[in-house]
Amino acid sequence: MRGAGRLATVKEQGRKVIAQNRRARHDFAILDVYEAGVALKGTEVKSLRLGRASMADAFATIDDGEIFLRGLHIPKYVRGSWTNHEPRRTRKLLLHREEIDRLMGKTREGGLTLVPLSLYFSDGKVKCEIALARGKKAHDKRHDLAKKDAEREMARAVGRAAKGRARELR
Image (cartoon, rainbow, N blue to C red):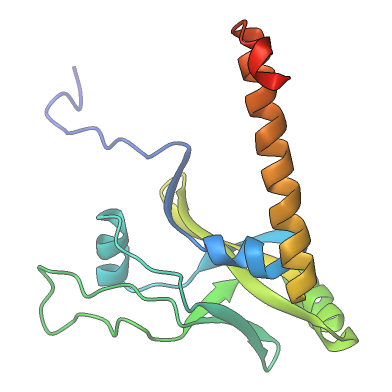
C-alpha cells in the first residue's frame, strides 16, 4: 500500500463568510455585484481564518487600471513575528480585464461607486464581493425602512391569524 504514511490534506469546500458590510445595503442602491479575489500576505490569511476582519470603513477605488480595496481592517496575526502585516494596508482586488474596464466606464459615467459587501472564503481562497452602487438619499432610506416595517407587521398579522388569534386583529 503506497502512500499510507502520508497525511491527506483536506481542501476547504463551500463558502464561509468572514465579514459583511451591513451598512452598505442601507446607504447604497446595489446595481450589480462582482466577485473578486484579494491579494493578501500570509499573516493576513491566518488572521482571517480566525474570523477577524472589519469592513466598517472599507471602500474600493480604481487607480491606473487596477482596483484596490482600502480601509479594510485585518488585525495583526497574534502569533506573527516581524513579518506581520499592516492592519489597514491597501489591498489589490483581482478581476478580469473586461470586468475592470466595464467598472471603470460605469464609475466614470457618474454617480456610481464601488462598495465592498462581504469578505469570505470560497473553496479555501479569500474573495471579496464588491458592488457597483448608487448612493441613496435620506428620503430613500426612510422609504426603505417604512417598507420593511410594513412587511414585518404583515408577517406578524399572518402569524397571529394562523395561531387562531384573529380576534386581536379586529
